[in-house]
Image (cartoon, rainbow, N blue to C red):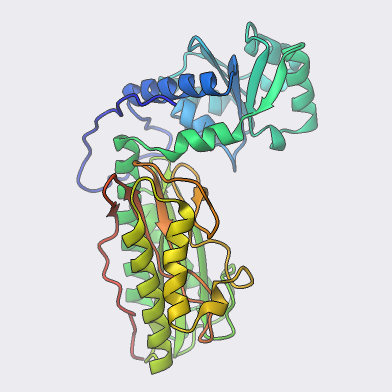
Length: 395
């Protein structure tokens, strides 16, 4: 894959609210992405790549267009000689792609039938990679196959996973901004928590602050309660009680990029047992972050986290029965590679961003703690400066 120099970028020190459909990355960012994609086409022996996206999984379309698409299905084609064309089913998405300024050949006639798809795929060559082909509706896949003629359609979702793993300085700046928004949202939640506040009202507090700060979206998991809580769930119409945990994975999106922080607080006076459990998870988090640097495997980071919990007598809770991963990539999608879990052999490159979080059920209930990092050659840059002390409100 190309090692083309990442574009430089200057940004404001803090995020500034703006309309989500009125902003696009600089053109030099597009050139950098195309350069890396060209190298990936060579590596996978592809003549072109076709990207499919729809409103809830449009990250690869956004990666190649710089535009937020929300109205329907979209296709983007990139050929080996850097021809880039787009076809959308909704005129609003076609307009958004044109406004972004990266792609000038844009058609809004995807609903019109296979002849538009044939026009999109003209002159592509014998091997076409297709991102998200596994999610493509039967009718659309049939139109693509017909338009491709005898060309081989090769699954290419993993190609884009690899591309998006290494992020540019511009992307890093977006993630930093999203982290700052997340920290502000958590602070606002803790400031307004009280017994009697309903779970959905607590979520509304966070959503209000994030949208006020310019967030496009927020993928948020939350749970209240104690040892009965084995995971997080949608907020309910239940009033909060004294002496219960408050935990959330807070994942706002800013300028197209998500960032995640994981936090646990307490509404009341924690017991010694609850403090000790929380302290074990903080120690696991710190061990994981201390392990991060370019070249280590995702599995090594997970082992560092789990070894702390094993040493604290919580080894049973490092098993898949109680957890999914010890962290994961976060960027233009909420859950990217690397998956931080034992046995995962992916070597983490410099420039990757992911959240380290030893989130697990344990005898005092589900606890979540986590921060996002940018991987460097010598370690990592930790993006949240919020102190990790068990925040409590004595009520």
